[in-house]
Image (cartoon, rainbow, N blue to C red; front, side, top):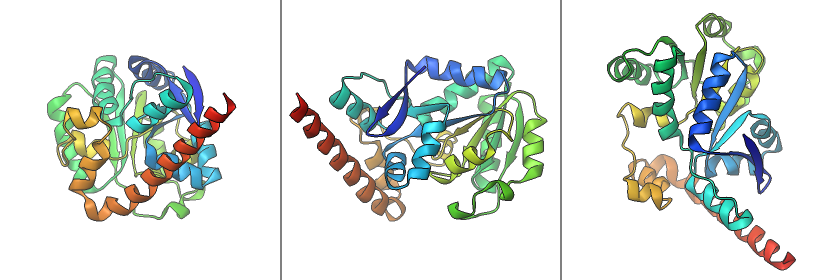
Length: 254
């Protein structure tokens, strides 16, 4: 698969099916690898923090989750890339994992969410092997480092069958945690953020027309205005501003 730079932010490009195949291959080879599911929020975090930008650039796969990212690729560089959204990747991966005998380990989120996850998976994916589910203690993103790793969890993950570790800590915590675990967890880690509660029915996903129009963020904002208003007001404004600057810069070079 090919990597490209969107405004100094690394993205992986290719067909949607190729992303799934690549992740399955990483799991089967037991390769310690990081998969980031990128949206405008992640771009903004990387824009503000060079160390976080490096974490993203070093990931094996960075899927273009957010529709605005695919639009920017096309408008700025003429790259036509379909959206590879975490909310689609998660269920599609689980289906393939069930067929290929690949287990799933869920790290992060609350005990309640993980209990509902276990119930959902046993019903919808009865053939899927659950290697484990672990809700870690709350910590701030500044506390993430190798010394704070849960050695028992690492041992449990490494002792399971070839697996995919789904990390549910939210951006940027989950990306920092996965980067710290590269080389310690002997399989592929995928940061799925808010995709899990949507899949198991704790939250609703935007209608298809809003997804296609790049308005999924607005639907989420309507569900959680208190938590998301400040984030979207900041990240969306920053992304639009940076894209416009790059667009006019490129026009001047023509």
